[in-house]
Image 1 (cartoon, rainbow, N blue to C red):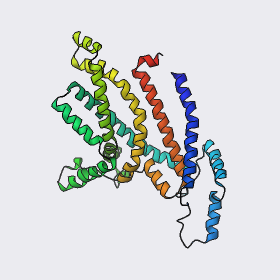
Image 2 (image 1 turned 60 degrees about the horizontal axis):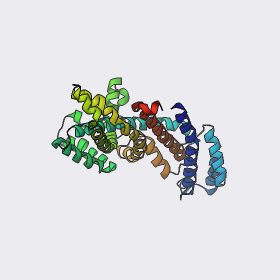
Image 3 (image 1 turned 180 degrees about the vertical axis):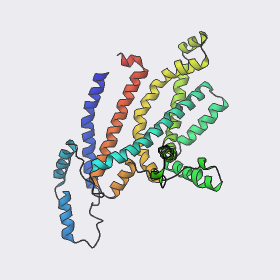
Image 4 (image 1 turned 45 degrees about the vertical axis):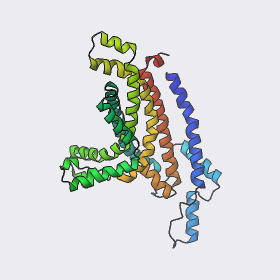
Length: 328
């Protein structure tokens, strides 16, 4: 297993370099220029000097090799727009996106697996039909529309209806005004309240998909002979479902971890924009509009690396739940 993971890690290196190469040339071939919005009153000679300082006067292949050399040394360069080292910008935004993504992953798999188990155990019942309808409803909803509906119903309308304050959630940013004067516990609860709406909007559609997968997987398992044998031994239904059936039903579910990670990262772009969450998605969108090439490339590398890591994590979890792979 360790040798397999090492081969996957080594094979990911040329994959990531290839992705970065494609993004580099596509980004630089797009219309526009980082210095296109400096203002009409800036003299042309100043603009040309700025272009030389940024290395934009060099041929494209020279820019590529210079950037790749710096990148391989761990230097992502400077942001044209923020005039800061990218090595300082990325940790801030990456941690913000990871908070949002990890909470969304918890919502996806805890809620989705629970709903799928209930549906399988109560197959063709009213609860199964109702949960199937709700799962298909949320699965078909665009994430940005769902985010806007959350803002409308859980924040704007909640205040108009006079609901208790604990049911009204903030809809923008990561912290409330004056959070620096709160106690550590108040700061924690304030951050959680800011996380609830964007994480739910990001994860609830995928949770519906996990529920459908979990239902099908559980139905396939609970009709097998070893489940009937466990029941014949007199084990409680809870033990049969959660110890014997669910463990075997998890084998196809854990592979979804690697598939949903890129889905969450791409969905986080719109979600972070709508909720004003200062993460990687918002950073990339702003960098694209500002033609901030180094930021686009560095952020693309981080997201690509996270996708590769998600696939490796999926392989590890697959081996954990299936001893045949771990011992093979």
